[in-house]
Image (tube, rainbow, N blue to C red; front, side, top):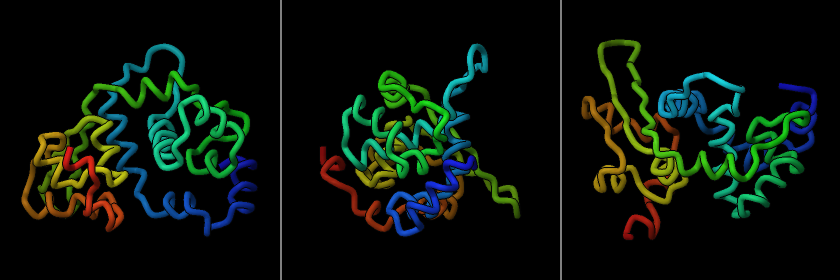
Length: 180
């Protein structure tokens, strides 16, 4: 963490909503999911870390700005920068980058293995569908029922998937999108 992010964290404090969300979620799970799902070749200039882009989209969904306004906010709001992992000397993703990432059609796949045995859970979904589940727009059950999320593995592991993501209790309720 750079000097700017440390200073911003001190000023913003642990009571900030984004700081609380950032501390609650296991971002390592999302990072692996995104890296495997996007299947980048690694050629050409280094792009943004997919986890940074994912966090930017979450901030955009939670706070509601348009992509141009989100781009601006990511460059000037320390709480957004801290949550997304953007340092002061790095420009935030532009609106086109955010739009392309949001609409990526690649499949996000992650295989979680229980370190105590030979138990695997295979998770497959598109990035937009996973965002809907994490935001609470669609419950895990509704995503599975509409074939937007597939969990393959032992029943106990499929049931624990939501707990591994550390989703809010509100994410089990769903929203009007479940009924659309």
